[in-house]
Image (cartoon, rainbow, N blue to C red; front, top):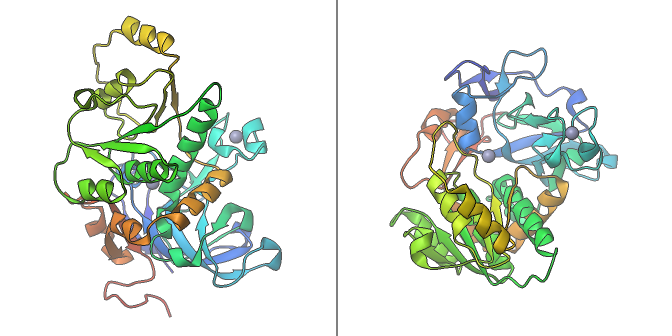
Length: 357
Ligand SMILES: [Zn+2]
Ligand SMILES: [Zn+2]
């Protein structure tokens, strides 16, 4: 069967290759891959910045954002043929550390976890894959065309869960939330904020393209000016860019007792002059909390699946602005100005017909 693979450590080694059917040892549930979403992590793996092949294999099947349909499942898995499922990207480390043992592999303490399509486990950009029932979540059958958005949604589902848990440390009655960055993660963060009844403001630099309308149609407010110029002082801030001047603005513009969640992974090595005294002073005097959040565990997949099921299906569909057959992977990875989320359709060959018999 066909799979989209890279040779980790080798730049631009991305190619389609024939790979063996998934071994039964990979899990009790056999899944037909439907779609794989692309993101910056995939580009970094293609650029050989990281990525690790499974032990004893010289290539890694790419793809972590995924959607599939069960072809065959052991009854004990709780899944049945035809179920729509999403594979959980990170799996607990084999040791396991205390966090992994508690089912919170997103908080893994020793870094020995594995990740499908990223670290030590083949990804989902192959025609069929296997995993155990506990390593996937069933999603609403109506989400067939947008369920591939679940993985990025889990990232913000975790962020919001943690924000609300941190808020509970004291009196907490948030009404205004700011999201910086209107990429897929920022837009999904805004969706979850609106679903909680918050007045959500999304900041990005573009003035046209699909992003302002997507924010508006969510019932949130779009801003192309920098956060400090807006005068908005949010109770909650979700930073989704990792761009250092934006991160700094996010640390400076908040209401009293606010919670700020950082989700963007910044590049390193560039120096910025910062008045640490002023930052510290403000943090202390405003009871500020700034925390980082990455990855997601099963609880967040469940929360994300619920959020998607409640969301407007057409709005979610608009997040996926390009959907290409697996064979057109090179074109898919060529970034276009209006891209929000680009998805590879694993069931289609180049001609738009099903690729396997
Ligand atoms: Zn991703
Ligand atoms: Zn662990």
